[in-house]
Amino acid sequence: MTHPILIIGTGLAGYQLAREFRKIEATSPLMLITADEGRFYSKPLLSTALTSGKTSETLTTATAESMATQLNATILTRCNVTRIDPAQKTVWIGEKSYPYSKLVLACGADVIKAPLEGEGVSDVLSINHLYHYAMFQDLIKNKKHITILGAGLIGCEFANDLSNAGYEVHVIAPAKSPLELLIPESIGKLLQKALADHGVHWHLGCVASHVNKVENGYRLTLSNGEYLETEFVLSAIGLVPHIALAKTAMIKTQRGVIVNRYLETSAQDIYALGDCAEVEGHVLPYITPLLNSARALAKTLAGEHTAAEYPAMPVVVKTPIHPLVICPPPKDTVGTWKIEAVENDVRALFHDNTNQLRGFVLTNNAVKDRMNLTKLLPPLF
Ligand SMILES: Cc1cc2nc3c(=O)[nH]c(=O)nc-3n(C[C@H](O)[C@H](O)[C@H](O)COP(=O)(O)OP(=O)(O)OC[C@H]3O[C@@H](n4cnc5c(N)ncnc54)[C@H](O)[C@@H]3O)c2cc1C
Image (cartoon, rainbow, N blue to C red; front, side, top):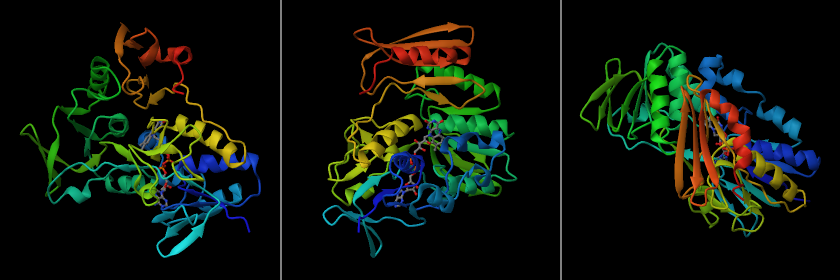
């Protein structure tokens, strides 16, 4: 009997890989294992779902059962893989083992927990899965005042979405401006102003240290000596690739599970893609990189050894109050930003020391330049 190709994870990386594989190989055994319910949904829609009136139910486009039929695959849901044994080519769910012919880690990222104290800490929620979103929608019902920790992509998108839905939103972050790690400060300030004009309150340059329960919610203590009373705290301070499972198999990890452009880990017949992977040194927790990886890896799994290609991949920030497309320069690239503004439309270009364009940020009407600029950027590999 041939052991199945086994994919751990049914997020977009796992399911997309399975779909691409089935386009090439209709019948060979395929198994997916997931710790969650295995519903198919588009995760980026979570941070615009209030505006679009979606719930966790209506965001679901297929159940695990219907995905199993579509993919001609076995899908084990609510099963947490606890260990991988590369020598025996098995994965373990508690005391039960499952053999594989090839194994793919598509196990996503872990949310970073804010270093908070106080008896309200366990009520602070982060959203990185559909079931988190279901909890969130339930918990914010009948509430009006929400505080977000973090002013990165996800924090800003939820700030826009929640304020669209009529909530009073406060954002607390140590940064001087939103999206500080991705875009120049002056452009971050424009986003900050646009969201402030929309009703978002900013508490920048400080962090929350304590979350204590009070009669109608929580009292946050800020590092600048201020206090903020709120009804709900959403933490969006970031994600880190999930590497704990790879470590059980002594697979090499750094920021993520280390893979080459063939998505091969340091262990034979074990691959990784999506948010858990560090591909040729790049940790890019976005959709386009995982789609490119899935296409290449599907071919490799079907017998045609294929490298993934990573062109420059811009990301649309879902803050419709201030449209923004970003393509940050690759990590550690030395160079300078040149920022041109025509009224509210900003075009910021990042050139390296050889004057090669390496990144850009576009706002408002300037987002129309996205395709042309992307063509001018060199591929990552
Ligand atoms: C709110 C939000 C908005 C976003 N918006 C955008 C956007 O606009 N554009 C963009 O490009 N990207 C966006 N992203 C990022 C993008 O959604 C992710 O990069 C992508 O969905 C990651 O998919 P994944 O399959 O790698 O991980 P996940 O979706 O996290 O899936 C991981 C899977 O692994 C399973 N798993 C983990 N550990 C185990 C285990 N031990 N045993 C069994 N199963 C396990 C989980 O149950 C899950 O099924 C957004 C992310 C968030 C949170």
